[in-house]
Image 1 (cartoon, one colour):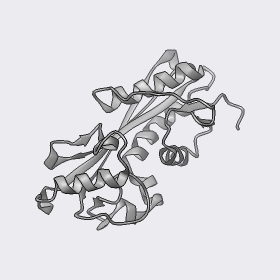
Image 2 (cartoon, helix red, strand yellow; image 1 turned 180 degrees about the vertical axis):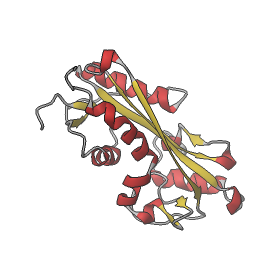
Image 3 (tube, helix red, strand yellow; image 1 turned 90 degrees about the horizontal axis):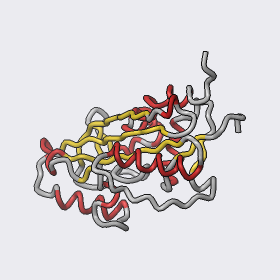
Length: 207
């Protein structure tokens, strides 16, 4: 702890929580997850966009904890599938689908799609809301990461669609490139780095 009131990270995904803490390691603010506070919030991601879902999660967590909260929502958008799976990326193959099931469904949907048309992008929206933000302001930042979809899962690191998302300039998937590369270049990295200055200013005394 650094003595500052903590900021709540509104996620139940521990992989995501660790990734975000790592991304914001240089920001002098304590980040606590819902699990750290013993909070179990059943937040339905019913928004029509990444921004709506992220704000829904952050607002709910901020109200429950009485503290500033941040959240994100992200997804994979495949050009040949008209932007699907998009905001339902984590539940593409069903509400309780595993990463492997989601990946398998994506590969089936793209089975007849040739390489030149397998372009895709990861999109992330990160938000900061609640007590302590400037005049109750809600901050929204976004990040994108462009690549293509492979024909089979490759690599052992990461989560979600990382084994299928190929970075053309590297010739490897995110799961093959490893966490250090992902932390430097990912859509989530870009969104949270854009959010970092606002997070740093959260409790800064007014001049």
